[in-house]
Amino acid sequence: MSAPPVLERDAPPAGSEAPVEPVRRPRRHPWVAIIAMVLGALMIPAVMAGGWAIARHSPEAMRVVAEQHEPAAERVRVETSFARVVIEFAGHDDAARLEVSTSSRDGADRAPIELVAEDDGLVVRDRPGPGTGWLGAGSTVAVLTLPEALDGRLAVDLEVGSGALEVNGALAELRGSLSSGAVSILGPAGDIDLVVDSGAADLAGGRDTRIDVRSGSVWLAGTYERLRVNLDSGWLDGDAAVLLEAELSVDSGLGSFALQEPMPAATTLDVNSGMFELRVPPGLYQGALDAGPSGGIDVDPQVRVDGGADRPQLLLSVTSGRIDVTVE
Image 1 (cartoon, rainbow, N blue to C red):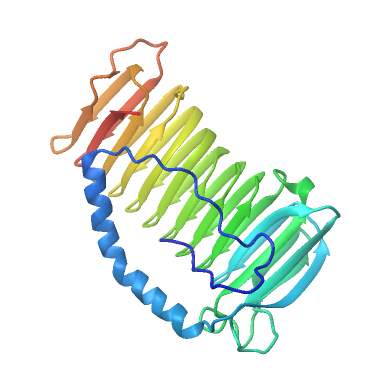
Image 2 (image 1 turned 135 degrees about the horizontal axis):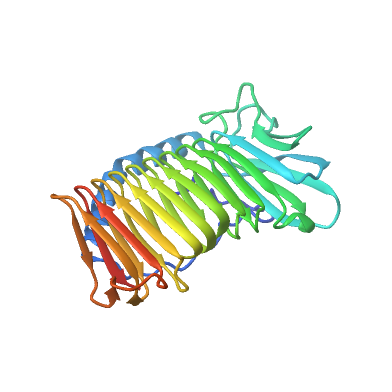
C-alpha cells in the first residue's frame, strides 16, 4: 500500500518532497512475478476507493495554516490517523519547528495537526475537534524540522493509521505500529521494533531489528546487525546485509529477500504454508534442510549446503509451503 498522494501546491513546505526510493533489483524467481500480478489485481478496488475519497474531500490547493515552535528533544512521538508527517534535520538552533499545510477548508485556519511538548519529548498528533480527522482534514502535510545535531540521535515512537511518516535522515530508535498507512526512513533507524498491519514500511538499515508483518508489506535495504521478521499473510521484499543473525518466520505470507555478503553467521528461514525466495551469494554453507510431506525446498546448485562448522549456517524448514534458494 502506498503513501497518501500529495496534491500540487504553489509553495510546498521545505522538505515535503517525496523521498527517492532505493533502487530495487528486478531479478526474481518466476513465481514471484506471478504472485505480484495477483496481489496487484487484488489491490485495485482499494486503490480506486481511496482515490475517490481523496478526490471528494480534497480541494485543489494546499495552504499553510500553522507554524509552531518548541524546544527540541531527542524523542518524538507521532500519532496520526490521516496526515503525512515529514521529519527533517535542517535546523541550526535548539528549536523544533512544525509547519502544517492542508487542503481542507473546514475549520477555517485551524490546523488539523499540532506539536506538543511533554516530559519525555515532543508529540506530533491529530488535533481533536471539528474539521479534523480522516474526512475533515483533506490532504494534510506536517513538516517537523529539527536541529541537524539530532540526525542519528532521535528516537521515534509512532502510531500511524492511514497517514504516513517520512524521516529524511537517520534515527537512534524506531518503535510503534502502522495500520494502513506508510513509513519510510531514508537512513539507518537504530534499534527497530515495528508492527505493520496492512500498511507499507520502507527501511534502510538498523541495529537490533524486529518487525511483525500481519497483512502489510515491508521493503528492507541497508545493513542490520540482527534481523528478525515474523510474516503472517503479508509480503517481504528487499536487498540487505545482516552482520550477525537473520531469522525469518513465514506463516502464509510471501517474500523475495536477498542477503548480501558477508553472510551472517546464521540464517534461519521457517515457512509454514507460504512461499519464499531467499537470494544468497554463491558458495559453501553449513546447511540444514527440513521439508514436510507437502512442502518443498529447491536450492540452486551454486549454493552448496555441505560445508563444515566454519561456514555460515543456512537453516531452512517448510511445512506445506515452498522455499526457493537462488543466487544473488
